[in-house]
Length: 386
Picture 1 (tube, rainbow, N blue to C red):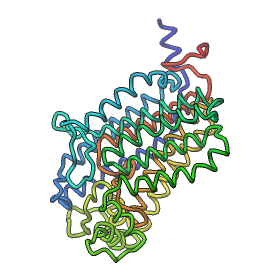
Picture 2: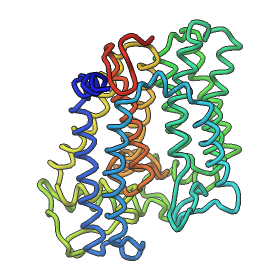
Picture 3: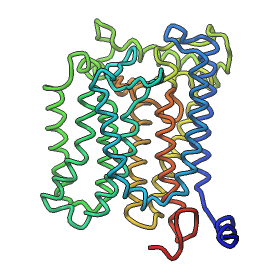
Picture 4: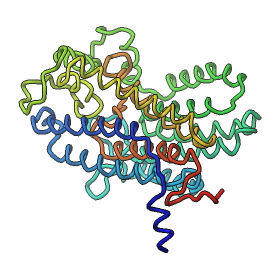
């Protein structure tokens, strides 16, 4: 017993400190910004009070603990529990189509559950389940994946979550799932023939969405990007305010204050448009600095995918990369009026407890692949175990 404890406590457990520090820095900045948004009553008309920053702080601490815990768990064992977490995630998402489903004020989709007075977004759990299960699928079937039947099964696996969240009306999350799928399958040994066919398939899918799925309002959101200033309904109002807010911050920003008069109000400034508050508080210099940190996170995840011990670990990292990268690009593009407003939060900064914990959990999966890249002993893995 004593020898086992000694072996456990003296075991070498390596954690990607750089990645963990970067995401926690972003989470801390986000929590700080939400605190001042709440305390200044900048978004009081949206009901943003002290509970928001307290929830964010709690979620950051919980998420950090989850990431560290996941770093100790052998990802190769975790993926084999797909038959538990995949059905659980699908059931939770399915409940949003029942009377338990909840549509947040100002949102276009019914993608939430309200449990014990708290809002919960099941699609965040589905992201984790998909990355794990699809990684396992790819690792088991990579040698056969270019055969038509095997490719069809992979496409069905990737298409299921896209279809489900699209049915919810959450098109932003559907695009995120598509990005995760694309990065993961392209990191496998996919034939160039499928890559050549991909643009045509994507074009057909986009056309189908345009003519049969998107509402007129969603179409206008997309079209206005190509014809700014020509919208009689002023759908671009939120994005124009966002750009004004970024300009208001100047080069070095206005600093942190509890006086709402110091800032330009933008709808959802605590959530999807929190980058506009970054620009007001820290200015152009601070905004660029944050973008550098987010870029570092993405590049670090990608770099970790190159040092994993097996293909399974690489697929998990590429899924995480696709998740974080697509969120960053779509959110920043939305704020800069280079992409339509589709409700995609900025990772680790936007308000949302479910999103915070789930993002940390995904980072934890990357940390697990990093920690287990060499055969070392820790709580869940032994040198002598294959």
